[in-house]
Image (cartoon, rainbow, N blue to C red):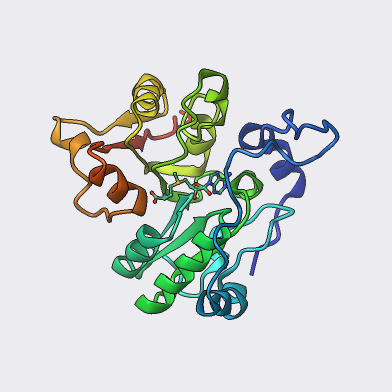
Length: 259
Ligand SMILES: C[S@@+](CC[C@H](N)C(=O)[O-])C[C@H]1O[C@@H](n2cnc3c(N)ncnc32)[C@H](O)[C@@H]1O
């Protein structure tokens, strides 16, 4: 499924999102430090286990070892490629895929119960245009070529509210250049959060980044979910708990053209 590519270019890039200088506590691991919580939750029911056994192998993206053209993951020549990082239970991923059958959706999630939930949603909706990466997204992203994505979703990412953990936030000065590399000109980075620290952080770093333009005309732009958006589980929980979410859309500026 994956296309051949330039291995050395893709491994050179891996420093940005993979933060390969940070290792697990034994200091000897080649794995980047874990930026996520649980990989497994409650024991899975038989039906969900069956999805992991039967449907996941058909949709799963293997960990790339060299450049991966995401278009080669799909059979339907997608009009655009969208990536959702940390899709949780997959409600948003499956809904976007169902609503946009001409797009190819890649979802990444480390939490196995979430992956099983997404498979259930995908099956229930008859979705055929979604592919799943059930590992740390930082092993995938550096292998994607420049301008290979049209949209990136960060829906209620883990907020890492402590200042000393700020580097772990997916949205931020370290990763914005990588998102800018991945997005086509005019491509969109969408982030939503209900956490005040994270929202402040996004507004501190997103609007001033030279490669992005914050799409904002008035309060409805951050108070209301985009018209073509779909709810997520964390969003529902936040609303029920009285924490109004904030939605932000950043459009990638056109790359400078040589004269
Ligand atoms: C707060 S939850 C939000 C889930 C979902 N987007 C929602 O709104 O309901 C953040 C999710 O990101 C996932 N995650 C965190 N770090 C990740 C990584 N490096 N690669 C893939 N998924 C990750 C977590 O497992 C978790 O499910």
